[in-house]
Image (cartoon, rainbow, N blue to C red; front, side):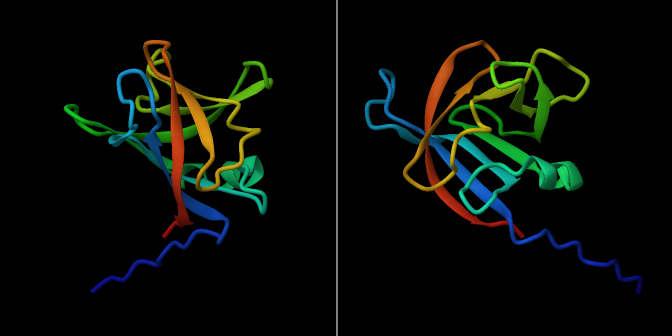
Length: 137
């Protein structure tokens, strides 16, 4: 039987879960709407772009939205935007219009209890609560 080497990620890689925060539509927030993604974080909880460049294929995202099929994609660092670069969730590398962009993801610390915003494919901004940050395997 052929054995394959197990790829392990550096300890800086975390699995981050975001749940929809309180909104007009969901006054209590929602655990059925959100994202789970893997990203390298530095000691302060910020996304580490250098580590991302070395391991970008491991930076995956799963969008879960009640009543819809999960979407699976990648965390991608793109040029442009107010920070001169932006982090997006890309579900189709061949399409330019389906990216969901994190608002100032480069400046946010991903620690439980913090809030982040994501602009969806329709251009609507939603706020999410960072629920958990755990080691990625």
